[in-house]
Length: 420
Image (cartoon, rainbow, N blue to C red; front, top):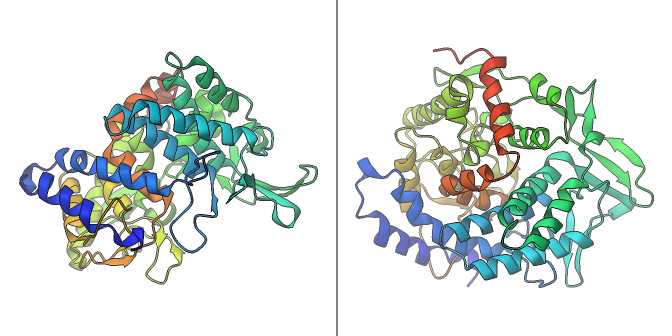
């Protein structure tokens, strides 16, 4: 039976053994703690069986295990470290996995230390995708992996100095100035290179210029380690719109991904309470209002695969399809209803035998599965949301964490507070 149908067994164990004993009025923390071990076990099924690298694959759909992206590899590394800290992974097995990943990355073709956007996975190993003589380099995809490598470098500094240095060297060699534009005020999405000589064939036309985006965490990280000038972070905009009658930060598709992904690694509500914090709380409240107005059973919207098996953007302005990782991201905010919503989502999902990832798309009206395809990105973000306290602690141990926290706190100084 396909792994995608093996969802009920572990989920039913999780529900019966850990959740039903908890009243819906007192679910905060317990729901997410109970889910973590099964979610991590499912994540391990998304790793390539190739012992030479063990990279996380991209997804469980047709062809989804034949390639990956740097983001997937980085998020999987972070999940591995968090699982060790939470007693869900053996430290020896985790270190061996990290070593394999580091060895695989060391063999990859890069551009000035930057990882290719697409990585082919085959029985012969992992290789940069250079189809048609071109290699794409995505600034943010590469940054996700360097972010994870830096956290792992810090984690193994005392227990395995050689591994730590190997991980850190990959961060130190990366040159992100190639993406900085417009007088050190803009950060480019990426570029396409000639696979023969690394000549830039095309600069991608857009910049990351909005703090309420996936780039928020990565620009802060790159600035904190000295890879990007602070002017890029300062000049990124942060404006408000209204959703369900509440002021929230404006972002692409108004998804939980852009609003809350960074909150799994830093307590943004504490660091920038008048801007990020208020927006996060209002975002959860707006999600609840929209769900109530539409008669939805569950809520949580972010990019995912649609019922038609097309990758689509969902959010507050397009809440037709819910996705489990968005519901989990909502629990990173200390707001009423988020954990109860995740609990109801878990209850609604049916299930067979052995660890398998959450389905990517769910009907918010009924909780029924709309698409069983699973993405490494979404599954890892779900786990990180459940393990946010652990991830925040891991990040806090890095040498750059204090500077990153300072940069996040500047959002309250640079931008007007969220209106009441």
